[in-house]
Length: 58
Image: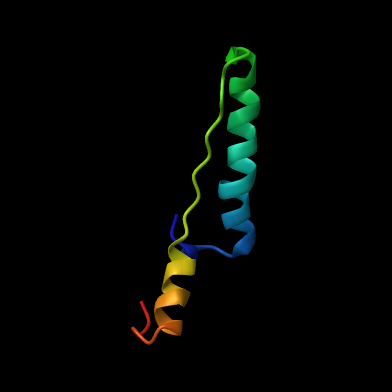
């Protein structure tokens, strides 16, 4: 899902709610030594940093 294809609610629905639902579904399979690792995109931060440093927009 590309950010330009949906409004912010759609992005939150996939990124935040989807992650929470997945964790909830997997929790019964977890043991005491289980760790859930979540990854998030930082591409928007990198784009803003590039602009700030004078490298132009992405």
